Image 1 (cartoon, one colour):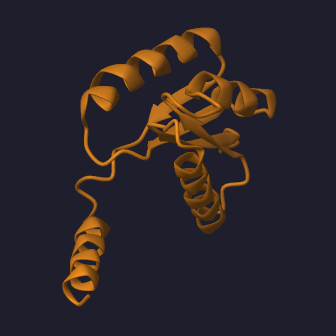
Image 2 (cartoon, helix red, strand yellow; image 1 turned 60 degrees about the vertical axis):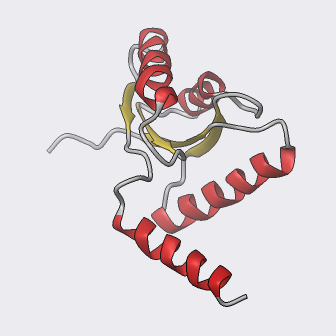
Length: 127
């Protein structure tokens, strides 16, 4: 059996010029990393926050990641996930030739999303 590659996870969000919004993403990423048992992880932003995706991947590669899993913190497969993420991931794969890049799915389509929306609707409905 071959040894498993050291894997890092990047929680990749759009980003905002409002830093408290970026910090909220970082808090969710921190909790998700803890729940998932991911020891090697970073948060990254497309724009408006730091680090950006290349910066996060650089940090993970420097920490010894041989595989980077990019988890979009985006609701749907819109333009950024259809165009920007594959382009950036391909550029990073060209820079870090020994690091495998894997892109995950957006939040849309996950069954937990229905429960979240129903709960938010019930909360607002009952105000």
